[in-house]
Image 1 (tube, rainbow, N blue to C red):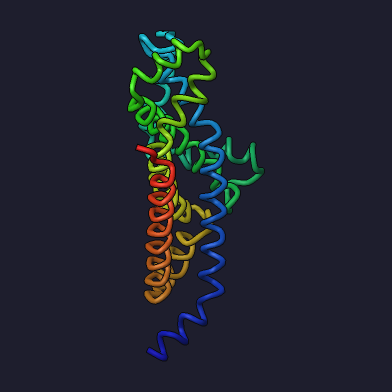
Image 2 (image 1 turned 180 degrees about the vertical axis):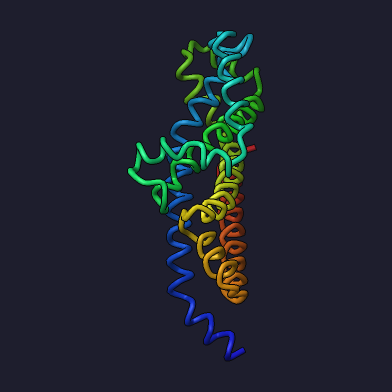
Length: 223
């Protein structure tokens, strides 16, 4: 026990640095993916047949675009968009560089989650808002999103946890974070102790995110 504690103390700065990089990558990626993915998901829903802004050709195009983007495995996407990553952050290696593929991979995922959540909203509520004279923007901001908020929070929790997994994968090409730590020390240097500590940290991180997501969803669920 004493030996384990001594080893953990020795590795702690390394593990905390990896954790800080993972939180940075995931936090920034979730923010940008939400800024782009939520409006995209809303647009997919409201342009459907019979909805408040029916526009079939746009709905079909956006649905196709989201499906294509979701079809590309993350490890391939990460390599395929290296030129875009270099153009945005000036390098393809490091934590900042990893944010670009993480964000691109999460946008269609967020859009589908938003689409699923908004479709759960009772049509009668939308019709009631229309009858009271609410315009399209008001229906989106004051009816659709608030009514679907608990489901949206749970969906974003799943997205965040998925990005934690993807960020570990980004370590394969020098993306930094806990994944990079596990590969450099656990795999390449056969340091089973650091590998185990990294896995435990990732498990705790995912448990913490899920707990926070569940708490927030319950907080906003008024049913």
